[in-house]
Length: 337
Length: 282
Image 1 (cartoon, chains in turn green, cyan):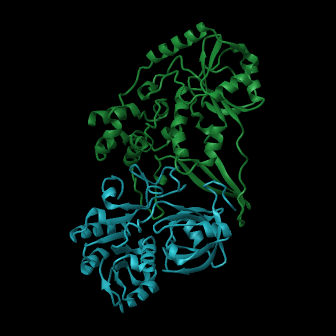
Image 2 (cartoon, one colour; image 1 turned 90 degrees about the vertical axis):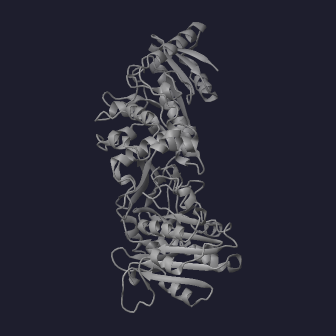
Image 3 (cartoon, chains in turn yellow, purple; image 1 turned 45 degrees about the vertical axis):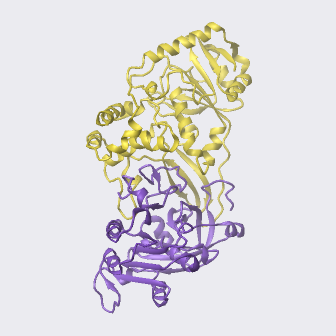
């Protein structure tokens, strides 16, 4: 697999080069940082640790048209097929999250919308030199320079980026855009490895997740669920901003006679999510919803796909308006085991 | 419209017959529908207990039990209670109108495994809809099964679904059929009381018998208790669950009871399994 160097002053040429044949997604925005398609180079990545909203929207848009129709008629018109896309500068935790969610969208009946986009997407990750205060990827088999799920990993070496192809898809991308790239030296590789190692040591928070998946069913009626959910406002930020949360709603929209059926992100933290038409709700309060959120990530997903559906990105901790902290919940779970 | 492997594309179907089973605010209307596309009509296969997602473009979709047995013919029946936005729109449909259907979804009653056994269904209200295909299937394959007992009740006689069919079954010596209403009413010739009480009156032997129950949660709770009193083992008891659903294919997340997706792992569950699932009766 190829190893390359990209000088930072060539970043914008590099992006334009990639964008000439593929849709390029990069982090944009000041307060709320999101991944959006861009035609031209923005600033070189690395200034912001991670996007506020994970790049799951590249393959699983927040609102997505399933098909269009004319009201009163029966023909479904499918949306256009996805373009080839490259995500530049996503963090390793978010790539791992996509790997985890892939299992859900491909088990049994394939989700053609997700799969089409996923197969056409190349992930170029940027290793974290300075992890955030609530990062805990190392507790969940990740690391600041994990390559899992990535096609190319980049590392910020100061004036330049080191790029290493991880998959054939990544190798092909680097070959296609070789104009701005130089071959990496052994020293560059060494510098990357040292940074990666140092970054791992900078992770301050964590949890020993062993025993949690097996133990959760025994804590179903435990008082901890009441306690950890008491402050919850039910805003859903923890789930919208979670890179592994994949739940969605399906709704029809009409404008005059033109209609579309679309799906949009939904959240298990909302009462309506499980509300029956009869008025009955199997998860009537935030206690049951919080319990479901933790169980889904740390037990149900493990039972179904043998993976914990959490990558330790820390977003749900950073963005919760009332400081609910998943590590705090998990340590209470550990205590109760 | 063919879906070409896209699981979200529904198929157009024509309502051949439609009638109200019950009247009032939460009335139940039955639709007999046939797919417009001949290839889909011929290739569609469902088993008793499976569901389909039906709806109207521009309004939405709902997961509904298929209340007909495949033994009845190349059509589907749905008995729909008028409840929310989609079911209210569906209730407007008359013969000749179109609805959109995708599926079938979920597992099914293991009717093959049950061959040689006596069958008992215990339903309440709209809960008879998923049980009806079992009754029809067993009637159509009489030689494969032992005796067939149906117990069914509703609040009042006006709330009974499939009333004509039950009255015909009462004339049929091969089916042991029992009806109830919750409270006394004029000219009601059958049992008065709750379904779990009627179950004790009928007093079916657990010997070589499978019991399947569906109805309101409170009814299911007491039916299960009474089945245990009658000596049924957990493994002899089946029920179906329902939860809010959107995708039908185990992706959208909401229908889970514990680690089971009702849309894929269910809706049919053996009681021995369900007892282990903390959210099953939530």
